[in-house]
Amino acid sequence: GNADVTTSTWTNPDGTHGSMSTDSYDGSFSSTTYNTNGSYSVFFSDGKGNFTVDNYAANGSLLSDGWKTSAHTFGSDTYNTGGSGSGTVINADRSRITFDYDSAGNTTTDNYSATGMLTAVSWNTGNPYISTSTTVENSGAQVTSSVNSYDGSSLVTTLNPDGSSQVMLTDGLGVTTTDNYSSGGLLTSDSWIKSNGSTGTDTYNADGSEDSSATITYADGSTYSTDTVTQ
Image: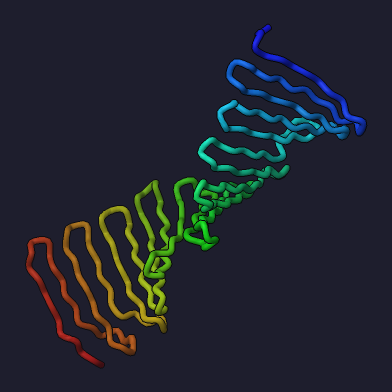
């Protein structure tokens, strides 16, 4: 055996028992603790400030774990029998990330600042190509982005502090449309870019009526404008 490794065993009055191995060369050690119901925990430290602990059911399935790194981040995970689970990561600056997922592959991740403020949310469905995230900008605007990595399409919704909003849709083929709404939900303006390079904008009346002034810029640089007409 390895002369640097020392192994000991123990049995407690309550029936729990286990073993521990210590490596005097690198300072690492591991231990396994068995409970009377057959469940057990495995602890490992690399001697450099990193450790993990894994908790198992009697049948060997992983129930939960915990860990810490030498960079002073730490976290834990919980695994459910149906395939769902959750976890938490706490960074050295005390910001944290929490996540959970179900057996269908739907995942939600929340990001918090060191003061506990929710700063971002991301999630995805069982579709492996689509991912969605929400962030809060310094201005207070909440931006939600949904991206399809398969076809390159995306949908970005921005909700401003004053209640107004913007919806930008890209089809992945070079066509982008952007709609701007008032706090009352009325369309106030829009803009678009086509795959041939032409662009355009529309400005709508305050009452949301469809009549508008419009400007179109074609790919060759020529433009076309209309004046606002109220009907």
